[in-house]
Length: 192
Image (cartoon, rainbow, N blue to C red):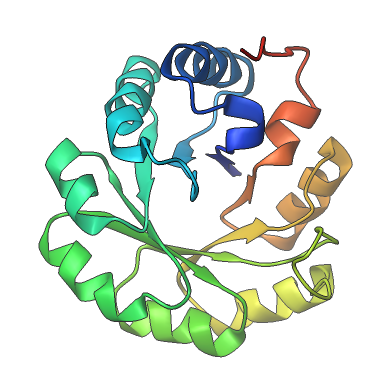
């Protein structure tokens, strides 16, 4: 099953040096297949993005920029992760040679993303996640997987290995998480 690590300012910080050190350590520990640089509030996002890409290249993982198609193309990362409101940009991103993952929360959004040519979706929340609404649950995920052909990453509230095992048993392509990768880590970064 594929692992999709999503960064957060809370753990990785917006300090380039600490960010690079922390991300490198997490990639070394967890060996994810995909990594998303996600930091909605960082005013220096574009400045820090090349540091993100450099670490991803060192570890030979697929690198994704959050929502910004132009920046993804400029940096020559693997792809872009679009929000659920950006489905209309899937074609543009694909025309730029980018892989596209898009956030989804309903069967309709998943099927639309598939029809529009996205490479994969995150589907959430599967388990309880603060401020993310009612969990969909594993049975809902299983039902979705019978209705679509697109790669589906389960997302939301995945913080323990036992939850990863449950997701794996559904046949999902993979799981995506922010907290799992640092909750199950023996590494605590030094914040400045």
